[in-house]
Length: 290
Image 1 (cartoon, rainbow, N blue to C red):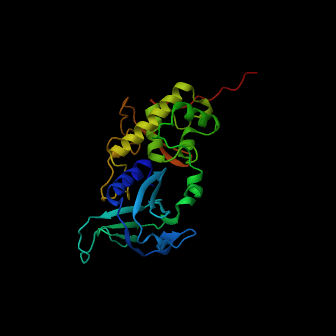
Image 2 (cartoon, one colour):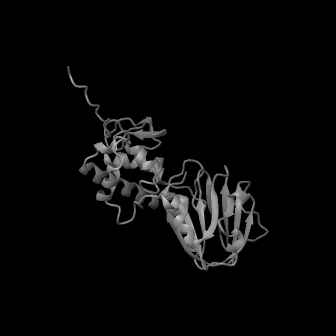
Image 3 (cartoon, rainbow, N blue to C red):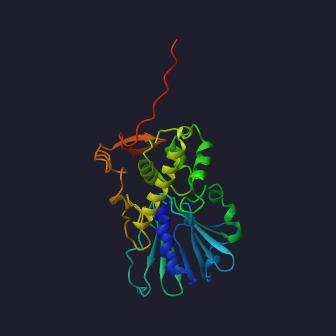
């Protein structure tokens, strides 16, 4: 599933191309992929794009006149831009059997929403209703915004003392946008074991974790995200973060910091990569004698 860096990469590309462009047409090929909430989804036609934004893993497009489009890419969703000037009678490599929605714009460009497994959703709704969206309303803080500091992170960890660090980082209500890849990478950066309980993390480690989160997400954005299987950006390019990943997908390979072999375990139901030397397993309390 695309995480914050992947969705942010797409957001920036759409922002550069779509602001001020009016939606000239919408073709829906899978009805569940494009729906309306209190409005007919076709209401976007004729409206100029005013803003492209992101919240966690959700991409938002606001149009003039108070109508917004929320996109949840889920497992295999893709948003692909067709360049301006592409002949209409020329078959597009972006138009495939997985294409669910096609948007036309007044400059002749097109935007394809492709989704092989059909889990992704595009929802049209009044802009005033966006803050109450069920997914957005429960999201935690944005980790790349200034307010996300060690104090805020520590307060969040204190509210979940019995949860493991890996589990809490995957919770979108705790912090927005982090998934399996960047959780593993951030914990390695901080030297923290994924199974450590939140209540056992002391202040210096909280600061290290905050810095690790910000660093790996920023690097992810700079590299255009991570591609395991389906993710590509709006230009159809694969993300390059995994070329520099420290632990994720590197089980059996040497740690980039200490050369210990990276291992893969299961934490919070997810495959988890770590260095057993850099990220020491939490010690268990000894039972009292007598």
